[in-house]
Image (tube, helix red, strand yellow):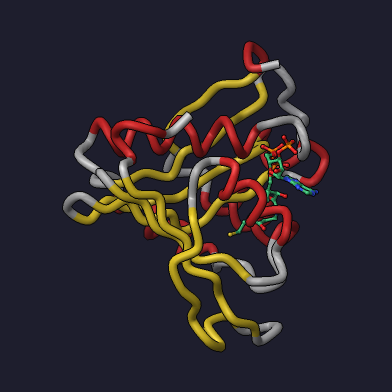
Length: 162
Ligand SMILES: CC(C)(COP(=O)(O)OP(=O)(O)OC[C@H]1O[C@@H](n2cnc3c(N)ncnc32)[C@H](O)[C@@H]1OP(=O)(O)O)[C@@H](O)C(=O)NCCC(=O)NCCS
């Protein structure tokens, strides 16, 4: 399956495609301008994209999954991850995040953090499977709908992630 995919940094022309995919994945999606900012922000951090190869007519320009993270000194902050609905439950998110975590570790991160809606069981299961643990909550963190966030952390990034 992976051989049919390419992994790359998002390209300058990707933000409109990412914004369309984002709208299909989140109740309160990031705006194109926000995605453009992350794509142009670059290092330290990245917008990583998994793209299908050889299928030019594929929706969203072939982008099947993406993740956004920033590196702040020795902390990796995972800001966004999504997989196109038709490509879920095939291990793409686990693989992409695992890659991003190893990359961040090589770049100097020893810990990773993220927030997730408390009702998002799929994502919570994904993150806990990657070694994240619950370290707190942020009340009313999300809008549309209003919801608390669970704060997750992964300590020992350099040594333990899959
Ligand atoms: C959450 C999301 C990224 C998972 O992507 P995915 O590629 O389907 O996930 P994977 O196939 O890599 O699954 C990895 C693990 O995640 C969990 N998981 C994923 N989808 C799940 C589901 N529908 N139900 C329960 N657990 C699920 C499981 O633990 C799974 O491991 P398993 O297959 O061994 O059971 C995807 O559902 C998505 O894009 N959701 C909308 C956007 C979103 O919620 N992003 C996270 C915001 S913090």
